[in-house]
Length: 527
Image (tube, rainbow, N blue to C red; front, side, top):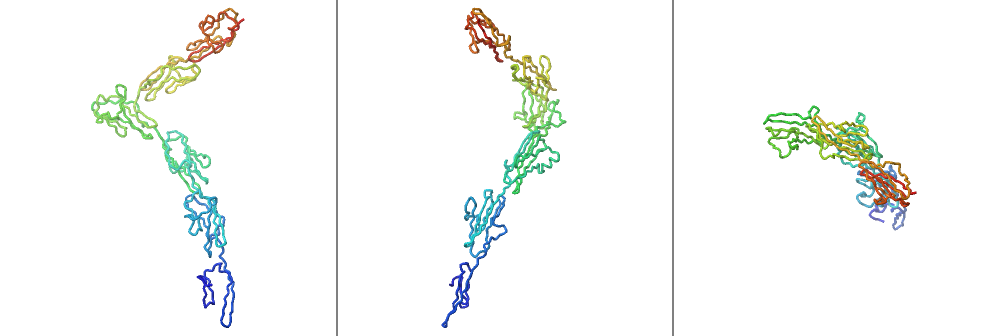
């Protein structure tokens, strides 16, 4: 029975079995013989296998493994040393066996998942087999993810105007519940609110938060950061809030027209100290020419040897002043929010506005235009027939309109708009014509007229309106009556001669003008 693992020693008196296996179990018999006889002894060998146990028994056979997305995780199914090499089978529920690949360790006792994703979460089973014995361990892999921002993680730039309502939104998605915190320039917004800053934080559904700024001011400019956090991590998003504002002059700067008297060949410096303004204002100098047009002093047709603009437009230099340089110079600072001018401009009512406005009585409101340009801001006064009008009742004076609600015919007439400021005045007149829909007098209608056969009858229909309505007579409501020997039109009346029973019936008087139409019905009965 000698083999590579079994050998005899001491002249056969000892049998040595190396690396004993369960298959070596059995009855062994040793027999000694010589010429005088023989003798034997039997041995029963029972090879016991090592117990089949997992190396890490404390975690049990039902194991919950929690991991964070993009981390590495290892599921361990190692057995304690066995006489024969164990075999391992990994199965992912719903997907089948996991065979080979980089996920399974060299001896298959471990399942290694690198950069784990939520899609890899689920139930896994490991069956370890040694000979005819086996053990099973069950794993539940839970993959938790840091929150994701529904609006995306990229920084955003937000530009608003002063006093504008601002709403910054931040919504966190994910399996785990997230908490959201806001910061302004690194300071928790809760601290700013507690100190009296007028911000509001509102919760919007699950995982949503809005930061509200009811009336944005210049000091609200800054970086607002939304940070969403759960047990798996955090994510942040920055909102760069920029407040736009129009340019302005210093409070002690005289923005009215100033008179500068200089001598020929002198040097003149005109200043335009602009402050503030987001985005930065552009400054343009111009001059009013004798024909009323304006000349841009930054254009290429200016003599650069005598005109120079410095300090981003805040200074205009004129060298060797000539007589032709006389005039009104205007400095205009402008950005997308607004503009300011350093000049006084006599009010000028703009051309192209209607001089006559037509409306229909009672149908609607009407606006009489008076658009103008002026600096400084002028006062506007309206009058009618020498009587001053105020904003009251049906009359409302707006900046460039006079609004009259529910106009009546009494509102017709000429209206005067007077625009005045410290530099001068201008005036325009607007004619209002209120059209009046036709109204038929002499009611009530419908009414009945009785006449005798063979006689003549006169049906009267007197209508008023503006413009004067035209009259049409109809048999019934559709057939227009054409004048004849029987039917005669006299002004607004209808005369019917030689009456007979066929003339009996309903007659309609229809009065119409450009404002509308009115109708009255008269029933004629023949005796």
